[in-house]
Amino acid sequence: MFAKYDGVSGLMTKDQFINTLRNQELLNVVYSGKEWRENIPLFKFILAADAEWAEFLTETEDKWRWWKQDANADHDKAVFEFIDTIHFMMASLLHKWTPDELESFIEKYPMKIVGLQRVGEGKRLERAIRARAAFALHLYNGSPLDSIEDLCMFIGTVAEMLGLNNIQVHRAYLLKNERNRQRVAGGVLRGEYDKSTESTLTL
Image (cartoon, rainbow, N blue to C red; front, side, top):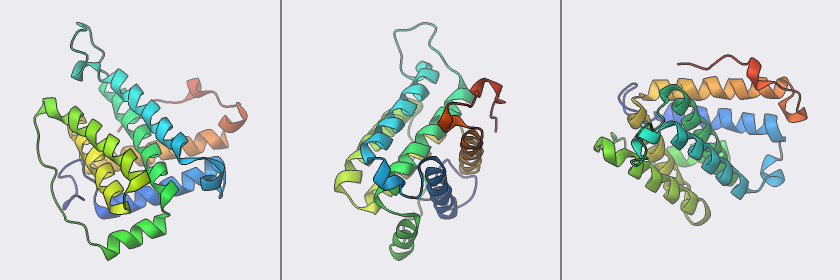
C-alpha cells in the first residue's frame, strides 16, 4: 500500500501518509474549530472532494472527452486540483478516525509494502474512479484499512497519471496546505480574502 522507497511512485510512504493526516487535522481545526467533526457532517466533505475531482477532470479533458477536438489539458492546474481532492478525502477519513487512531491502526496491522501495479495509460483514470467510489462506500461500511487502501490506490494512480512521484505529491500537498492556512489568516472565512492576489503554486 505504501511506497517502499522515496521517489519510486506516486504512492506515499507510511511516514508521508501519517504526516499528511496530521497536517490535514490541523487544517480542519483552523477552518472549523476543534469540534469540526461535530460541526460539519461527513457527507459535506465527500461532496467537496467530488467537486474538486470535477475540477480535476476539467483540466484533464484530453484523458476522457473523446468527442472534443480541442479537449482541455492543463497539467499544472490538474496537479493542484488533484491535491485539493486529496485534502477533502483525507478530511473525510479523519471524520471517522483521528490521526492517532489511524496511526495506531497502521502500526498494529502492518501494511503490505507494495508497488503500484502498472496499468496502461488508458486504464489509470478508470482505476482512480473505482478507488474513489470504493473509498466513499468504505467510509460508511468498512474498516480504516479498507479506506486507507482505497485512498492510497487513488493517490498513487492519479500521481502516475500526472507523472508525479511520492515526494512531489507530498510536497504539493504541503504547499497547498500552507496556502489554505494563509487564506484563513487573510480573512477568507470572513469574505475578506482576494485570491486574485495569490501567486501560482508550482512544484
